[in-house]
Length: 585
Ligand code: ADP
Ligand code: MG
Image (cartoon, rainbow, N blue to C red; front, side):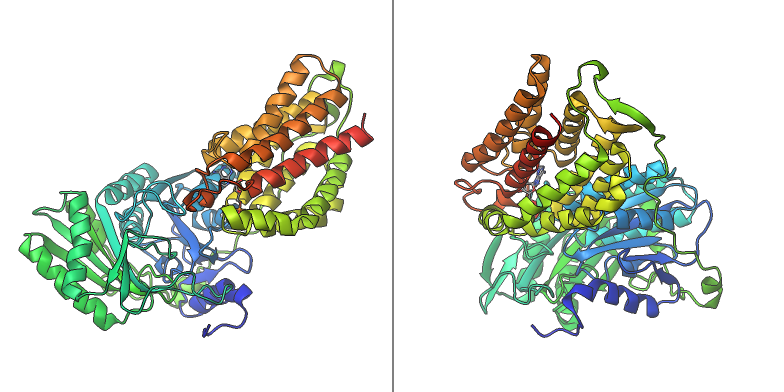
């Protein structure tokens, strides 16, 4: 790996700092926040936020500027940003008229951004969102249900940005963004792989003379591999796939984007554009405006994509509207300068996490009359520490499961999350149980990452709501909290039991818990049944085919291996039941 970096762990923060130093019109909100925001804030304007994994520069930080985005939130390379970061982006973008989030269609991004919208609502900020799915290559992909969002997203930034700058309302800006999404299509091809700074070697290989049609911007599979051909032939294939998808472009006016993936010279992009324009002309399609350059890249991957956006008068007016975003300047406007800097937006402070929720110190949550145990914050923190150890000790096993069925990072993710929970032990012991859950939710969201981070984070937030204002949990209160967790997880992750996920351990445990309480069983017997249901549930994932998460794209769909997420979920339920049985009843 030959890269101009200092430390693979710092690439995102150092990149954004460098970007901010090249553009006085924006501010960098700090390490760990990883947001680039406009300095100048126009009161009463709809705020626009986008973001996603890093490695696609200039997306999205390069599109922050007057007439385009107000804030861009960066995740780690090819990984969605967590909600704590996105919420800071939303706050930086908000000036009282609401905030529209522009999300590329990847499962992690959707879960993290929508959760952030829920959290911003608690701070009184109205948000809405649109999801860009312009890639016609494949229907479902490694990281998305439905089409992926790629270079066409830049047109959505541009057009929504203009509408917001013109003073349109949140609903109006959303409507024009949706119109753009409905009329934009992209198709790409790759010629060589990219290398993630933290990995050091290519994620796939292509033969010397081979290209992959339809490959995604993370190197995820496209439609087919074939020998490299002429620029004319490639232009024909890319546009052919777009035309096969829709007839909306026939006889229309379009905006064209010929986008480089990072490792292809502009010379070749112009040659490709030359061919693209000839095909459009032959079809009677008028190129109203054409953009050639690196707009949505994939590190150093070589290759290109072609995007067409069908225009009407409204979209044209928005496209023509001035933009000062450094990576997409329109009408020669000059960015930033001293006037803008003088009106600096103050970097928002982090949200205080435990300031609301009035607490009734002595009131437990659940059926007060028949409660055989009380679970306090002290207990919960003790249990978390025991679980952290169990997870830590099973690192090799869990990693081997996820390597066989997923992308191999689940143990590292969840272990990192639990290390952070353990580090917050002292702080949490002093809180009521509802606030402990809220704190755990926030930490899991920001520290675990991946799909499981946001799913656990959302689940713990739901658990906190189920016992709002309560200092302790009773037997039924705990059952309610677990039920709230599984409901939130299923709603957010769109997974049902039987899809080979952690739901397969949690769902049966909750069902067993409810059934045991209904039939009046004692706590000891109840918890034994809950534990057994979780362990059996995890075991049952061995025979299941994965349909959610990355495991579903493995050729054997993980059959024959337990799901890593189900196993770590069963550890947690097991430790919880054991802790209560040993210490509280
Ligand atoms: P990622 O899938 O982003 O790499 P992790 O590796 O941390 O995240 O977690 C993988 C685990 O997350 C899987 O083993 C599965 O149990 C769980 N999972 C993935 N997607 C979903 C979903 N949509 N609903 C519930 N659980 C899921
Ligand atoms: Mg994983």
